[in-house]
Image 1 (cartoon, rainbow, N blue to C red):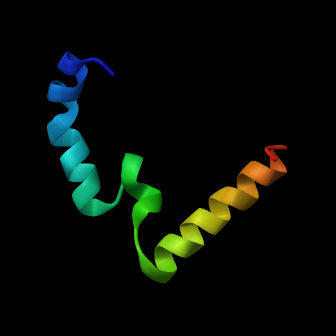
Image 2 (tube, rainbow, N blue to C red):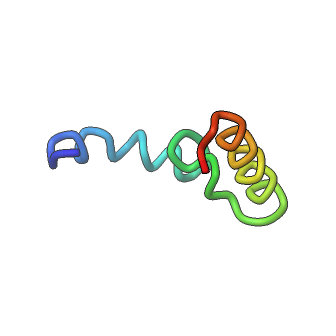
Length: 50
């Protein structure tokens, strides 16, 4: 990501961070975050990622 893209995306990224959506969907702490990361790991495993 170049500096232009970073600057123009900053507002959208901040909104995603605040709501734990988009790029930050899996960053939520606690049980919900653990569940999201576990589901992601299981899905990637099904696709053959090891």
